[in-house]
Length: 329
Image (cartoon, rainbow, N blue to C red; front, top):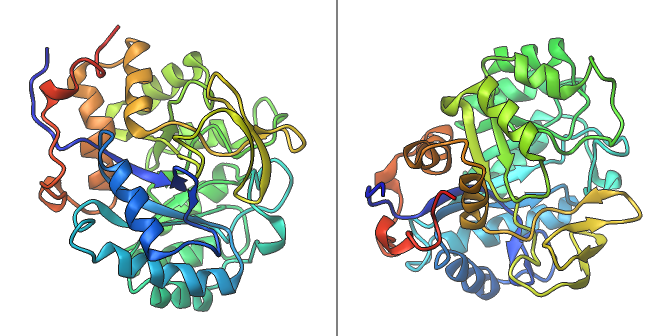
């Protein structure tokens, strides 16, 4: 048994938890603190609160709210920042996924600067589509501000990804997802993303977003240095199966944990925590315990310019304490 002590795992994409949506106009500081504490008690040492593509009014309301809540003594070192997933995405069906296409915007440096101001500088990751005109310019600006740029919800090909990577983009958001169900067999964002050596793939290993063969292919191509596990936990993660209105979608949470919108034929985030995702990946017997720590603790911290000392010790989880749940099968 690998006996390294870690504070838990790091999740760079959490949309909400236990019925609380970080992109909702009903979000309050009390709700955010309550569900963040609940998440930090379930194998998560630190996470980025994800705000998906939203209206300008919602950004103006929720970004400062989250930034303020992050400063509470209970969450310092646990909530590590904000992941702005949008609004500079591809609005075409399939690529836009569960995001509202009416709120998609063209890459605008001025608007992103306004988002940074509302968030009081706490945005750690910006997800944008590489092929949208202005993406490379916005990438360069965001990187200058200390923001990690990730490419996702896109139909980008190699040239577009290379341009953004040259401008400083380093990640691929929920790689293999946020795509139409039918794509060109040779010319598509999956092959382009695999081929771009400067981009690290964030993957959702919840047992639903990616089949085992694709997970294996991504890991073998990128190597453990360029893999990050995320949960993409939806606001209904932690709730029982049923029908939900979530992230502006009519979604069904199946008994097996699959969360989807049948009408759009897309997933709506996951119902899993980061610990669930690491456990599932461990069950595939593709990585050693040391490598699992790398892809779910070391790599995500490095991607946003932090180290282990940045994570609060108030929610310490000894590796041995999790041994009954985190095991290779």
